[in-house]
Image (cartoon, one colour):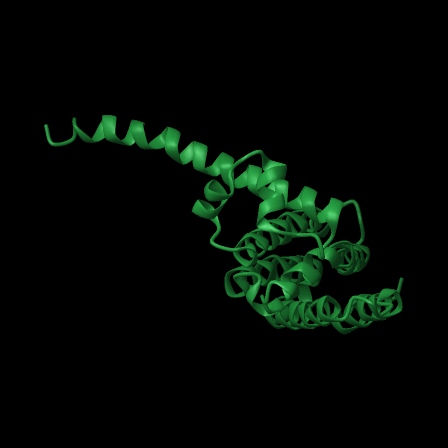
Length: 206
């Protein structure tokens, strides 16, 4: 009998949770539109609220300041980018070497596309290393790379976690520097970095 009152309570909470999740998605979509339309210099919570069609008070119920909003957007977009790259990493139609090259270059390309976002984070006083829950995200990325290396290099399967950690550390480190200095031409460095990491893993030259 103690269970019967709990069922209606759970049902009442579900619509609220659904609305809350939808509002978060709407605010993040609004933030993206403002970044694309006004750039980092024109980014503000007032403009995001206007672009989303909500009051500034409603926005502040979810995000206390623009730094929190930009950080959440960064976390969501980083996850989405990696999921896209993860598809490439697992694409067995491509040679392992080609997969790794495409993923590394894809990460640099995604970072370059997010220049305004990273500038807005800096303007909001959010250090790059604090813009994402890096421990959890890095662990997830390293796990996927470790699986990739173990399957692609079965003779070095025992080294897969180390290869994965090294690859992720190098790429994330360079992406962090890229976020801090977006004006630098990163194309050549991205290409060289990809080739060096592929060679370090032991793949045959393509």
